[in-house]
Length: 193
Image (cartoon, rainbow, N blue to C red; front, side, top):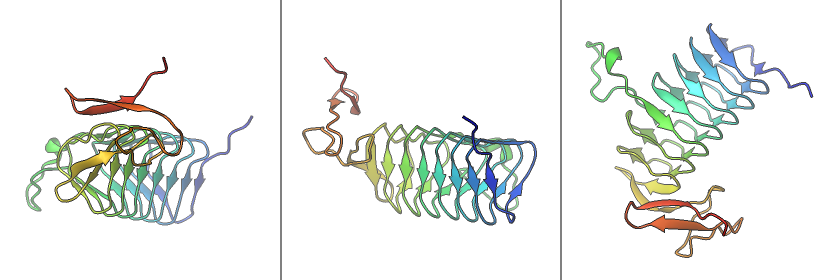
């Protein structure tokens, strides 16, 4: 089967070298800076800026007005809500260049970042976590954690499908069962017996 080539709107700018995977769509006024790698079947909305030196996995959806700066690395299936923000320096100043201080911000597979959320650089977002709209992430977010507020705090757990889990830790949509490790305060899918 032949894969569809990427679609790039005529108003988008793609700097080279860059890699754009099959089936990816890049919309109005987006700008992909050099040394950026975008996976297959992604959607970059209007006014998205990615790069330089950014990695985006397969099947990611990056909504309008999102900027992904050096240090951001998205796993597969990540959703970035409209106007969410990734910072890249902890103590920026207009007149002091701090490019050597850019901090890595890895985002795990399947993570969701809500509209207008802010992700302070140097923090890891775990696989399948969910960051509520408007939250400000100032520390690592565990896998499957639901975080909200300013600063963001864990208020619950979500399943791979993004459904909030109750105390039974059974996904209401799929029936998948999760288990909580009290010692590490982490959640993971329960292995079949």
